[in-house]
Image (cartoon, rainbow, N blue to C red):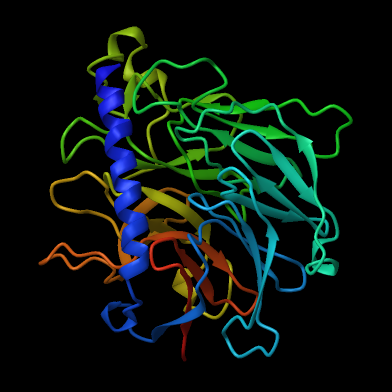
Length: 374
């Protein structure tokens, strides 16, 4: 309990410092390093605490946030590679981090509620929403949500552990899914032992779920690793709170669990405290062919490591059998390793119809566009 109190206190201090940094930071694109042929630009600036991204049928980009209480919609009407119109769709929501789009409707996740904005792209100036479900747990710790519709048409909604480390009730540390069109909505647990995922996607060919997961804190600088996980079927358990990163036994709860082989090991270890959040499979044709079906992961960056880690965009490459072959840095420069100064923190990734990708940044309050020039 005492450790968790210290953890929460440290997090609050970190958030307060981050909020102060947001007032003083400025975008420094000249520091960003990319592979040859790629370029980065600012697609939208002055988007407070830009977090999760979703794309509408008509090209509208929807943006959630965690520290604020608003949801935004942005449009590039003149098609010049930069947003020129921003709408505020909602205010006064509680950490509306998650946004998802399907069938013309926008879905927004608060901590305990799911909202639906019907025919949103026809009503951006006069948006109206309805609450379709309000029975998710209301605890704030890891309560912000990333949401997305799966190939099965269901909305996947994670419920993070309400602590740094604890043995919570069954509904926590899970990924659930709901039928948004059911007369009575009842969450179904799809995966367990998931401490805090803030990003997932489905393989474009196999249609199987992949997701990031943030490792626990207070075990030192280098353990445990954050994770990239693969869940090809319902009912898998990924170890939390008993095992971390597949082979790190928890010092407090490890003896209460089963052997490590009883839990699913990560598909890839992503480094300790790197805070991988958004992840998307690349399916476009603008980038070179070797990028097809690889995964872009936004590493938000450490908050309590003695030497900072993360603050970059990486690419995870899969082999022909769907196994992780390697991870490599794709974009970096938000962190100055020598001075340890940070000016930006990548959060989510979204592919646009032209094959370029957007990357949100909740510290620099902007959204970048990364494109490739042949």
